[in-house]
Image 1 (cartoon, helix red, strand yellow):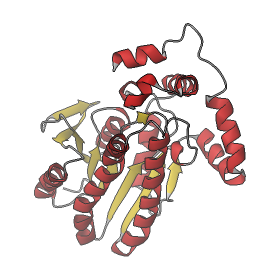
Image 2 (tube, one colour):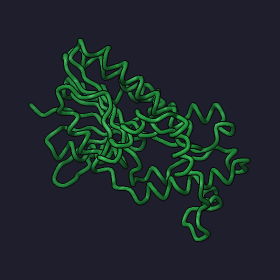
Image 3 (cartoon, helix red, strand yellow):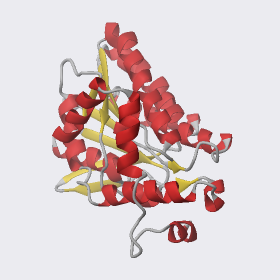
Length: 289
């Protein structure tokens, strides 16, 4: 009866699944969500959690999932918004519909979750909101403009939320990982116009470096452990970065100009062509999609 109740979106894979697992192993009663869930129990290292169906673009399905938990426990102590998606392509070649698709899941879906969870947290006079952001909110990356934009918006919304809910005993923060090895890389979507892009060479350079970095990065477990730690903080900061390297990057970001950051990011992502034997190529990516 004294177990804390955690509600984790995007728990079928990646960071969301790692968060649901680490919370369950540390004594939380956990409800994860995904589009294809069917109230099944997932077992991990002797601990289990329940998966609920949610389509984040459908406010009704969000309401029903939250109510399912409230009907059984009367409260939600921690909500972790970990569901995400990524769309790649030049700003010029991104349609309004494609931009909205990015924001529907990674921003408006979170707004929907909060609108249904926060009334119960206010009534309980306690609660923790943890939104999974990205280093892209601090370091915009070429051809990931919509993803960078939505993560920046998420941080500013969370920073505002902190001020609004503090009088009700509710806390909020953003966890911002850098490149992480998950299924997110394979699920990345490209804008339709990117299939015949005027930006082909820089797009291919940027995405090759991005994908190479993601596939060689650590898995989501470190991020999940930080989420668990944040859930137990009495006064969490507005943003927490995953790993010492990212903390150094944040410090450098505050001390350097945008012109300097653009130069460094250009050197990292736009200066080298992929090798001829690269696993990822422009043609392969679009053939698969």
